Image 1 (cartoon, rainbow, N blue to C red):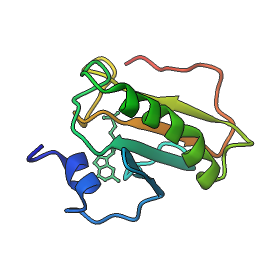
Image 2: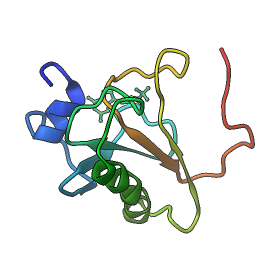
Image 3: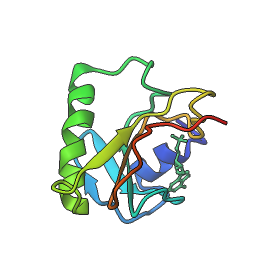
Image 4: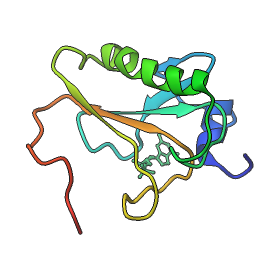
Length: 115
Ligand code: DGP
């Protein structure tokens, strides 16, 4: 999709070092990391959020990429959290479906903070 930053990264128009890539997704470091490890897994095709229709193959590939990325990032054994933000209350800032993979340090018990 034109003017979508993640489409441009996934399509190579904005070159970034990729941590992982396959037929369905690319993964790269978040530009504003919120953990020692903070990787984004992004479908190559444009979907606004997790409520947008995706094929079973893409859904499967997106989930399958999570442990692969965690392994490459070195947090598979220590543990990691995955987050998919959707919409305004979740403060989704890039309207292209993506999975955050966060880890590298012990997290607090609470999963969310409210404004
Ligand atoms: P979300 O709030 O779930 O939409 O998260 C979007 C994330 O994307 C946010 O943590 C910052 C990151 N981000 C936005 N633009 C870029 C970019 O151009 N490059 C990279 N590496 N990350 C980006």
